[in-house]
Amino acid sequence: MKDLVSIIDVKDHVGEEIKIGAWVADKSGKGKLQFLQLRDGTAYFQAVVFKPNMIEKFGEEAGLEKFTEIKHLAQETSVIVTGIVKEDSRSKFGYELDVTDLEVVGGSVDYPITPKEHGTDFLMDNRHLWLRSRKQHAILLVRNEIIRATYEFYNANGFVKIDSPILTGSAPEGTTELFETDYFGHPAFLSQTGQLYAEAGAMAFGKVFTFGPTFRAEKSKTRRHLTEFWMIEPEMAFTTHEESLDIQEAYVKHLIKSVLENQRYALETLERDIDLLEKYVNEPFKRVTYDDAIELLQKEEANNDYDHIEWGDDFGSPHETFVSNYYGVPTFIINYPKAIKAFYMKPHPTREDVVICADLIAPEGYGEIIGGSERATDYDYLVEKVKEFGLSEEEYSWYLDLRKFGSVPHSGFGLGLERVVTFITGNQHIREAIPFPRMLGRIRP
Ligand code: ATP
Ligand code: MG
Ligand code: MG
Ligand code: MG
Image 1 (cartoon, rainbow, N blue to C red):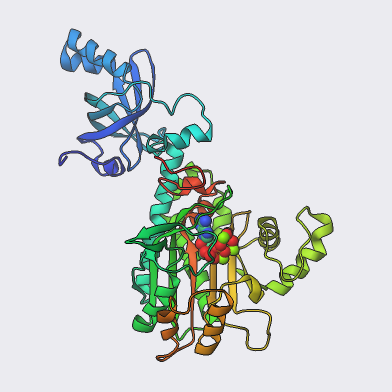
Image 2: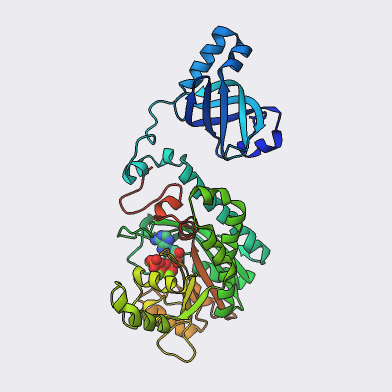
């Protein structure tokens, strides 16, 4: 409504009488004073109702009635509050509203989320309401800032956003995590990645990124896996893997820096360690080869409780956590064994057994946030790989075409949005990093 002021903007109205449309998040009171914590989605704000003011304005009877009504407002009642903005250094926000009138818009009874304590299943069943709580609100504002900063970064660096399809006929990241659906009598799959399409885009536009939902039927419950998550997948023609790593580092630093600058209040609400985030912005990320990471893990295994690991094994999350914590900054693990990576990665020029790739591992146990590689450019090599991985040559013929018509060195990567939200907000579980999470055993609300 046109004459309402957003809470985030009240600072521009000191001394003025304004109207705010909001919900009652909490209230407390003593004697002649009633405090209302209001939220309108932009921020939180305290409104103060003073009984004598109500009586003075509305008369003895009507004033008392209004004060009593306000005193009994239930949590999540929606209201339009009129009042005068006062500067107040005691309030966390720096300002307060001296209420002159209040109108109830929509009532509320027995709000299920608070004040009782609840387990996660209950909160997830009530995710549509849980979103309103301070912590969830703060996490999702950080998510929004990361999305904004993503567009800012890629637009500033000359990337074109191209949209990859969600319904596809093939499964590049392996067939065990596929959601299959019916496409007019033919099998189709929900996209696990937009990468192959991004590669086609890079050959048309030079530097591109996709940003969309991706789907994986992750059949185990972990703190790091959703079945529907959002991925940002840049792909760059005439770009080596080294250059791609520089872009990845600059991008992740830009995300952290943007959140520090534009959502600091949210980070404080979440009690995130700001010094650590600043360190990640200011210090170079570590780059270590897979070989050296394995050696480190083997050397340190006696003093730690992760499982023994051999060259050729994929890391479990305890291994990733150990390596990134060892260096204390986001860490690229470079050049994994060919056998545990995707078919499209470029083979190492002097080593048979590894491919040119890296995973970026966040410290503090947040795990893999990026997987990237230089892409194989040779037509015959890729045809071999497609066969070796049991994929259909016919299904991938369009992708193989990219190596027939002006193949160039190119690199790219995929960053999981919710992984980064979890990392930057310092939250323990990925399910809170997306408004309506989809995971094993959870598809509503
Ligand atoms: P992980 O080893 O953690 O299962 P992955 O190696 O299978 O991840 P990639 O195929 O490399 O994942 O996907 C690129 C990025 O997408 C990952 O680095 C991660 O940030 C994110 N990601 C992958 N799977 C999931 C998932 N199930 N839920 C949320 N994010 C995911
Ligand atoms: Mg996986
Ligand atoms: Mg992985
Ligand atoms: Mg990966």
